[in-house]
Length: 236
Image (cartoon, rainbow, N blue to C red):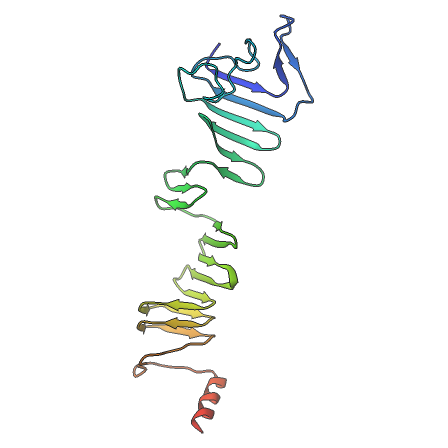
C-alpha cells in the first residue's frame, strides 16, 4: 500500500471472490470520488481491510493514530468540491456558494471567514469586488469606477474614480468637515462641528446650520425657487 489513497461511491471492497474483490454499485447515493493522503499508510475502503478498519481520509476516521495530518479532496454530485484538512471540511465550492469553515487567505492579501473579510495587502481589482454582509444587508462594491456602500433604508455612499463623493440619505457628522473636492448630498445633513469648503457643495435635501456661517468669500448660486422663497420671506 501507499500513503496516497482514493475511494468512490460506486466501488466497495468485499474481498471475495479473490479474483473480483470489488463490487460495483451504480445506484449508490451520494455519488462521490475521494482522493486523500493517509500519513499512517492505512487502507482505504476499496483496498483489502478487515471489518471497518479502513481510513476515510480524516485523523478521526483513521484506525491508526500514530500520525496526524490527513488531507482530502472530495468531489460530490450534490455538494460540489470539498477540501478537508485533518478533521475539518475547510472549504466547500458549489454552483451557488464558496463556504469556508476556517479563515481563508488568498495570495497573502485577503482573509475571509464567517466573521469578517480582511485585506492584509494591496488588492488589485480588475473588474468588481462585491461584499454583502448582515441581514438586512450592507453591500460594499469596489471596482475601477470607484467605491460604493449601500445600507438598508436607501442610504448610500459613493466615491468615483475622480474622487467625487456622493451621499444619499441622512448624513450626520459629529466632528469637523473639510471638503476640498465636490460632494453631492441628496439627503439631510447634520454637522455638529465646523464645515470648511474649498470647492463646491451641492444640496438637494435640507441643510441646517446651528452656528455662525461665514459666506464673505463665497460664490453662492440658488435655484429660482429658492430665490423666490428668500424674496418672499424678506418681503421683496
